[in-house]
Amino acid sequence: MDYTYPSVFFSYFLFFLFLGGGIFFCVRSWKRGYWGPDQEKAKYHVFEEGEISQWPQK
Amino acid sequence: MEEQQVIESTPSGVRTATTTVHTDATCKWFLISSVSYFFIVGIIAVTIAAKFVWPELLGTVSILTYGRLRPLHVNGMLFGWLLACDMGLTYYIIPRLCGVKLWSEKLGLATAALWNVIILGAVVELLAGHTQGLEYAELPTWLDVLVVIAWVMFGTNIIMTVANRKYEQMYVSIWYTMGTILWTAFVYITGNFATMFTTGVNQANLNWMYVHNAVGLIFTPVGLAIAYYFIPRASNAPLHSHKLSMIGFWSLAFVYVWTGAHHMLHGPISQWLQTIAIAFSVMLLIPVWSVVYNFFATMKGQWYQVRDNVSLKFLMSGVVFYLLTCFQGPMHSLRTVNAIVSKTDWIPGHAHMALLGCFSFFAIAGTYHVLPRIFNTKLYSDTLANWSYWFFMIGGLGFFVTLWLGGFWQGWQWNNPSIPFIDTVIALKPIWLVRFFSGIIMFCGITAFLYNFMATILNAKENKA
Image (cartoon, rainbow over all chains, first blue to last red; front, side):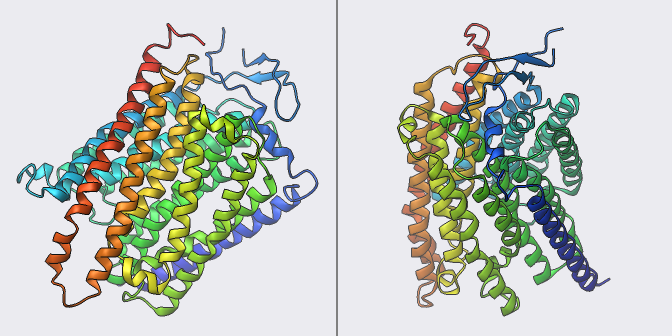
């Protein structure tokens, strides 16, 4: 059994799937404000949460 | 109690009113296993480095031959140490960036247990000589299936945590982590399963796509996710530009996957495919320089902290190694340079600078940063941590630089048909001797790191922070 052509078609499928996914999420990130006036807000999330871990008190 | 009150000044000027309580049990188990494997596989690394200099070492005992130990070293370091440590740190970072608890700590612990089964299974199978015989894809199929299952468990837990996040916008580390989850699935399945249905050149092409993207689309995005979190956190300075980080992410996403064929330049694949691989390899400079500029700009005015902060030492040295390794990559993808360095010792020098000098430095930095915090204690010894840094740095530089020079030397010799091949092997013996002693120094770094790590955990109860 020669899998060359099925593998080529599968590669085309993956290529367009990932390209489509990439373009979709890239455009969506534009709409969600990652490139707009609020673009720098997310970087402060790093400091929002405490770092120490603890077991929840019952 | 799911949340607690805290008063904390932050670079955003916000005094956080409530913070989520994180238990970090999964993170702890991943870190404990990965650091242990780092030490064990480090012994294998030094042994095979010694075999370059003294090939008769350990005689003909089959399980101790180079052919058995080398795949164990590669897979042990990639999956037992680095990816496991990166996963452990991801379990720490993502819930904090999302402002919620990890979706399922039980699923996380089950993933940690399964990951250990995989690594221990790999040790047995690879020492027994059971391998698929493909670079980076040596694990037998049943272990590949378990890796896929473990990855689905990991991905589900992280994606569900992100889906429940408190903030709408996602910090760049979350983007890179989500990218890692998606790309690893694609890259791993292609490299370990699709290769079974192809032969000859097609199989080699797929395999090199996998090998290159194991670094570029697995370890790079997860490593950058870690660096993007810990550089601002360890320096207490906000990232220079989130917008620039987005440019880096999307350019990496669109560029990286096409570069694998540069491993087959001058080989029996189409010229157009080789040219595409070269063009995309050179384009890698876009994401790399955007990332590195962002990190350096974040550190503006903060460099004094590097002197006393061991995590920052590892992080910023890792950034420099990232810049260097990603300058080497595009340059040795050019046909003229590739004609000299391809298949020589230059390549392990380059690969070790990426995986050890850059991404392992990020992982070690993250581990040093989170360790006292997740065990609510103090680091056992700051001095020992500094020693581990210098061992890694001096041993690593000795290793990288020696192999680059040796690789060029080897390549020039190979390009001269009047030199018998065996003479080119003998000529490299001094290079391999330096490689061995550099390996010993790096192993001292691993030992110091492991000792400090374990001593911190064992003394956690007495040394409450």
